[in-house]
Image (cartoon, rainbow, N blue to C red; front, side):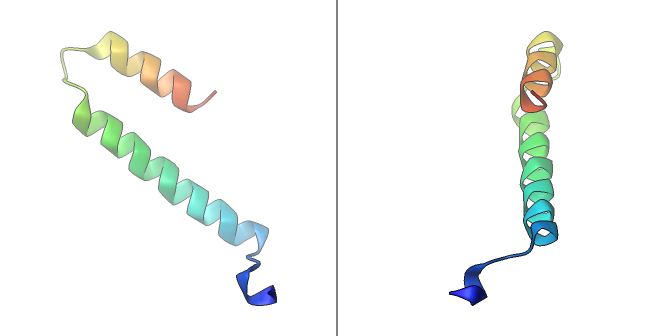
Length: 47
């Protein structure tokens, strides 16, 4: 069971990568002219 327990630092790295991928996905999916919606999504991601 100990093999499945990751350190706090490792979990933080995993979370950082997931957040980065999510932000890149938001930037790619949202049309550039829809900047107000993009701002709301970014604010929501950091709440």
